[in-house]
Image 1 (cartoon, helix red, strand yellow):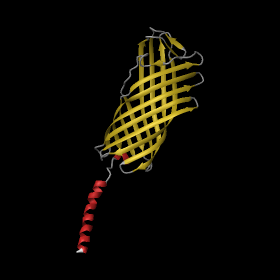
Image 2: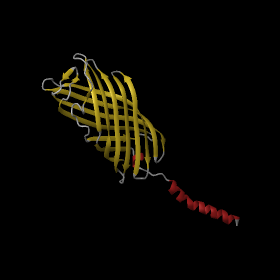
Image 3: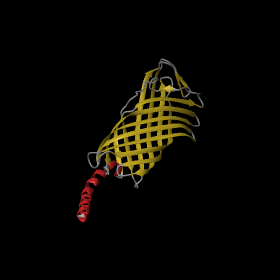
Image 4: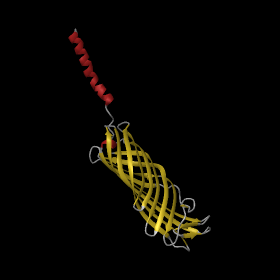
Length: 270
């Protein structure tokens, strides 16, 4: 009888093993496992921009709100592209790029000073403010399972500014600045099912080096739906806050910018 009882218990345990395994099996989502992940999308940031440009030769400028004072749009759909390469199990390289080009044409309500030149109230001023950001990073996942990942990274936001202000009587007062802004990052990804996954990232750094000083904060939240083995779709949120002071031999510039908005994208993994 005892032998029969042991046999029945053993058979029951063996029969339950597949069920237990099925219940405990973690979802396998391609975004957490495929070596390459890339995508393109439409980013709709709400933007605020204030800047100041001082000239060593012509004199100091004043802080200018480019949306209010110069009539630039606060929202515009721009392309966004990103990629990730898992070159070993816990290490990854990431990159993301977007560019926002805007122009303004407005009769000034009040005087502004830019690069030592004063534009009087009532003057028609033409302006442009082109900005691009390339984010790159190398990350290490200190916690990684089949359906979860947490890690840290170090990288740069390579910010490019091309700004100009001019009128019929004052030629374009233009300046182009390239600023490599280092950041530390924390990230996480979680597979909810084999087709749904969520991810988040935060970049942050306060710096003062060479000709640059300021701080950078960037956040990202992604919800990804991948119904096909190699193709998926996502809805995300992106934000970027930059406070930057840059100096050169003949200028000093200050920028205070925010970009916040949704990103709709299509991705591929393999």
